[in-house]
Image (tube, rainbow, N blue to C red; front, side, top):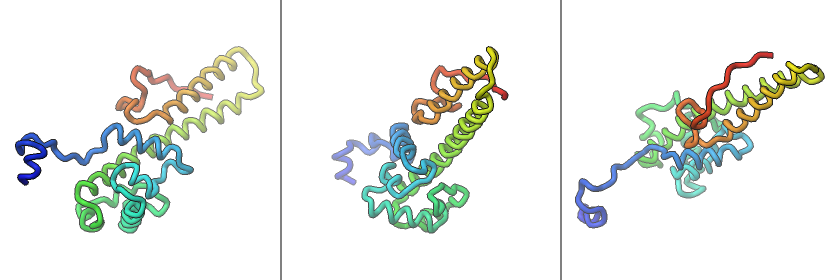
Amino acid sequence: MKFLDKVWGPTGSRPPPTDDLTPPRKDIIFAFQILQPNPLALIPLSLKIAKITGTDQYSNSVFRSAQKEGIISQEGYPVTSKINANLVNRIAILSLPKTKELVNLLFFWEEESTRLRMLQEEEQEIDVILQEMDGVDGERQSHERMELELRLAQVKIRRAMVPSKRTAGGLARGEEELPGYEA
């Protein structure tokens, strides 16, 4: 303890330990995952990118342990309903702070996956409406088509937006929620 006091100064001035995923870490995780063949599924390297593990081998071990405990499905999706107080004992190869970070990662990615799925569904819905409008002429149809194409572009932008650039509602700062649309 005296060594730490020399490094950090008096005991009260040490920074408190944190198990939260910081906004930059969330952005890095998001940017990594979005480039994967299946962006919704975590892979062992995701744990290294999130700085939960330090090596590929350790990432693989922790990932397999998490799958064995059921908190990550065999496909790589977070299963947060299986997280409980015994997790620290069940994944003993991880320290307590790193276990908390893993739990935070799983909850964060579950939320991001839900968001990405919803945006993907919205994009598909708009694509279907645009396909139905193909071949239909008219000034009103042309105006509606432009609005839908604009909305489609906005959905794609929102899907690619890193967490730190979004507000709590999932929109970019200053962006308004557009009114609904119908075919």
